[in-house]
Length: 617
Ligand code: ADP
Ligand code: ZN
Image 1 (cartoon, helix red, strand yellow):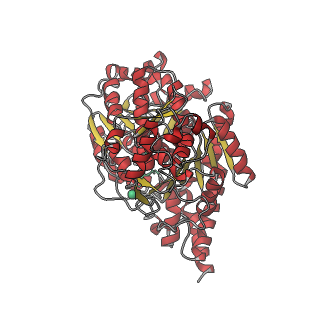
Image 2 (tube, protein in one colour):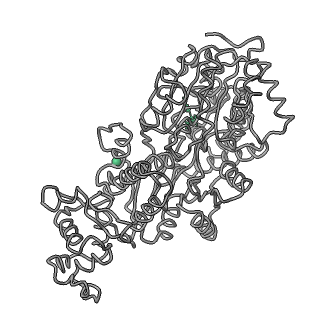
Image 3 (cartoon, rainbow, N blue to C red):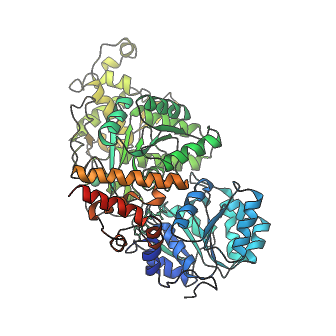
């Protein structure tokens, strides 16, 4: 493996040595080492890894091993500063180029690049594609191209960036430079699109498991969303950072204002806000502790914050892909995190309406509808949620996960075959043009003027469902829609219609399981096996030390104007509390403390720990 040139600063030449001495990690995560060796051998690769899977190291280490600069193409210019800060903290020579830099600063960086003084350079795709930059690249020794967020080439996806399509020219202009495309979007259609559009058809594919075992998935029925959200935050995430997703800008604003009244440190984020405001809010989320962002989906792509402890969805996301990406922003550090969602029948109808009114041809809409159906299937599943999620991405989880609400028995189910038959039959006999409200009344045999007018008090299903409450019937209709046993016909003002699948149930050939919706006023939340608070230690002394370490970290970060997690991740602090190292030598064994960080911060943290031990023994 060729080593760096004259001003070689990496004394080591094995990937593992670099992992240990620069990053302070003991071992590689799944596929990292293979990918690194593959690239270092000059070959192309596609890496599919879930968020938090450790994609960055896959191109950072090969760029350090070889002479020349690793050029990282990323659409996320707002994050480049943090990425570069983080690398510099490890004593790795990194820079970025994007529209936020002055002309003079740009020239400086370009000069360093051409002179071979950089290991990694982050650039926005539109910059990379300029003639000027391509010309400069031809004068530069390039170790590799890393195309991050590669799913941006996909026209079907929600992050489509037209400039990404032109990145295929890299293979023509620099055929000898290895390329790696990276993404956390798992579906096979997107994967094929990436390979084709980036001219990577012959690249080796490295596909990691998409399971995120530390995330607890939970879906509740929306009843009183404010109360539900507040309960969730107050009982489980009092001091945590997290993201609350809403469908519309208006709701984002409303929710953020209201949470802030309740005493939370919270900022709105959506595409309607001024770019400056958005950046400021994103920055506070990254640089401070216990910040909540309330956002539309405009927020989050590539957010590198490792200690996001919860993702709350107040509205339905568009698809399971979107949901998996959004929830994937929680718990990148591998510690427990929550993906919590509430939804209702009204939401299902709202999303459907939005879809039908959206621009796009029939095929596009059909695909989107199918995606929505898959999503509803996830919401209403009576089995393990993780099995449904992974199954959707083509991965089989052999056993139930024991880390989702259905596995924990939070969801009760019942055999709803007969109820489903009554409901479907009622839809049919009333002419397939009414919604849940009216149908429930007919089923319950209500004395209602409208029913009388349509003479629906004369049909056989009138009153056959008096044994269930109206709320229960509405829940049944919601679940029938989610299961594709009914569909909402927007042409006829949202009336429900039977589908091809309905008949098997009506004929008694297929049984149906329903879940029981929990009561709104639950006296207390079912206790979960997973401890609710991430940083709860068993004893007060440890908690005290943890708080002291966090304060020191925040102070050091502020002094340098960087995010606290760039100094040390929570995981590193937690290990410090658990192992109480007594010397710099012992500190070296802590995850996330490499040579340079040991030099920068070792003494300061060690003093604090030693003082703490003295006081407490
Ligand atoms: P991705 O881009 O795939 O979401 P990152 O590259 O940001 O993931 O890595 C996710 C987290 O895992 C980061 O905090 C990173 O420092 C950490 N990490 C990466 N590789 C390792 C490793 N081999 N051992 C321990 N932690 C790692
Ligand atoms: Zn499960």
